[in-house]
Image (cartoon, rainbow, N blue to C red):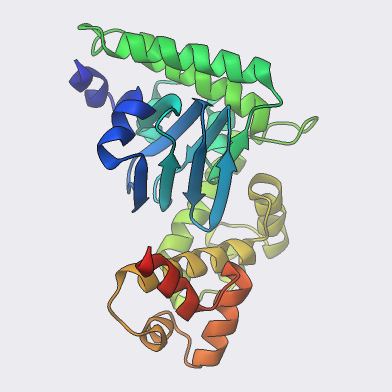
Length: 281
């Protein structure tokens, strides 16, 4: 029965069923194509999303865009649901007017504490539990209810957190520009493109690109490029066999001291200390 939802690029299961076999601790990993929405309804949870770490003791939601390195630690009594989805596929099945807020919701990793917003927490919990029930039905592959319920839950979260209160939702055109900018970063951040070159490829001025990034991602364009470079440094320090000096050289830092300062500025510790902590763990 689970294959029905999977064929549509969507899967849902409880935190209990997913994490029990890992003894409640799921180490650093990422999904290259799939995104996730993890809702904790009760119990403790610790989440790491790229360089962000958060601890919760009740209702919370984690939004994990594709490509985000993430890990979890739950308590044996933690309850909740894990929704895994192909966001691009889901959006093709979503009404055009509702796509932009959901895209904006997944524009960056988010750890959202809902303990102070019981109404939103209850609405999302109810929809995800209905979704999990529908997912297990024999006809879920052909029925539209699974997709509808997923869109409804994400829409409510988008209304709550995608943009600051009182702001207008970004247009689909702006969200698409940010998506294309992130794709360009993936292709060229190791080549150290300056921001104005990214802007030209997007047919924007550097000022307009920065304004777009601040509004939709909360950071300048340069900060997003630097964030991606720092993330790659973290990944290679944990998973690659190269020395710290070698990792810095691969990333274009000819001066090891400059690489160390860059890494400490973005990650709070030296690259040597970061490697020791994560490999030791």
